[in-house]
Length: 160
Length: 156
Image (cartoon, rainbow over all chains, first blue to last red; front, side, top):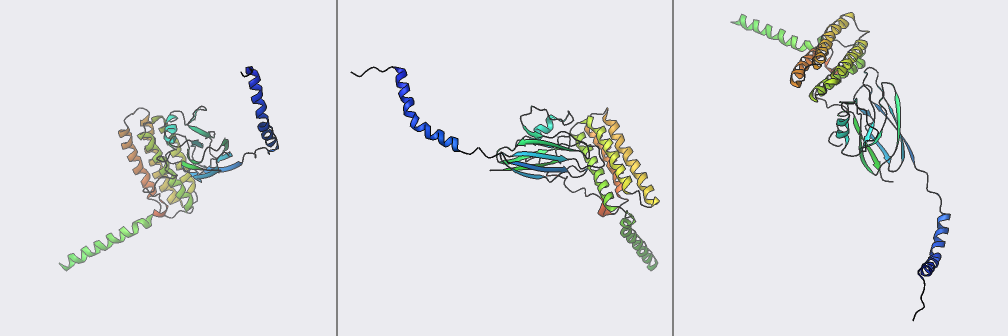
């Protein structure tokens, strides 16, 4: 007949058995360097003067990077306002349509939108910051009603 | 008979000469690049007018009219150093074009039938083309060019 061992004693034994494994792991963990600071990428984009186009219309950044994007409204003559809106693939037209009767103002809680700059007038520069999503091609556009059809481009996010 | 033939030949020659000389009547402005930009802006805003009407976004049409007047001002500025003769012709035709686009804008406040507004817009385009005719073909926007940007509706 085996001696009766209480449940708590069995658990303690198991914990003791784990110690030889846990100690080296803990030491290794302590010795590991801190993760490298997240890469910061600065991107600059502007409107093609008063024309409905972005210059450049293709941007690139690595996945996971902190992106600081600066948008400059390069217009001189027209009072048209512009912004820069980054959305998930396949969402551009729907987001554009949704704000058509709202002067193109993007609501803050729109989950289809990754990043957006404020609307700005000619000659003004605005910024936005975001974490680059998973690798892929993401459309961006200006959400002023009627502009997105011509004024759009692609952010190419590369794998790390 | 020979006399009639000679007469017809002279008429044909004069006709051909006029046809060849017609484009040359368009004057070369001093600030060609500025004029080219202003003419492109006029076309861009005119296309925006059309897009807003087609999308039944009538509330935006007066805003497009405001932009059209700004593009017209850009053209006035572009020809400010040109001879008075050209400036006067530009001003006359530009005023007619601006008035035509204003009519579209005014109509959009009450009219909700896109077809009627587009018909009025087509008249405004004709008035705008009369402005373009004052300049050499090389400066006029190509109506067959695709819109600027990537035109990436499908890719989004």
